[in-house]
Image 1 (cartoon, rainbow, N blue to C red):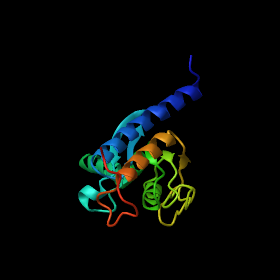
Image 2 (cartoon, rainbow, N blue to C red; image 1 turned 90 degrees about the horizontal axis):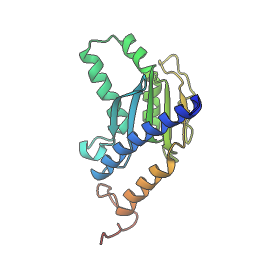
Image 3 (cartoon, rainbow, N blue to C red; image 1 turned 60 degrees about the vertical axis):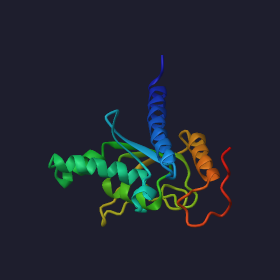
Length: 183
């Protein structure tokens, strides 16, 4: 029989697998392969994937896509700002790559409960790699700290990135190296 800790770990892995599915959809759409799901009370309530190339909008990261789905749903329910804040405080976000500084800041301002991520983001990471926005509480601006756990299925996330960049990003201005030709 699984212990409570084992059950929690199995849930984390299951939700990260769903985030990886979103990342694969992004990959298939020629987007940088990042995906996420937002979970409340053990159920996925939103998902997102990178759509920056598709939308030609650099802010359309997986986390922002998933957040916007919830904000739209909660707006239709006519929830107050306090009620929306209360809802986010009960949510966990699972994302394949450490949230960037923009997304980590947004998650702080929204008051997310916790974040689980796959691989580190050594260039833009906002949850420890570059900045630690998840531990900063900017009460004047309304931000809150949140729990952050990295390294969940990191190898799978890194593998998607490697595959994407080996093929060459067709939407990049000028690749640093020539794309690998498909047989």
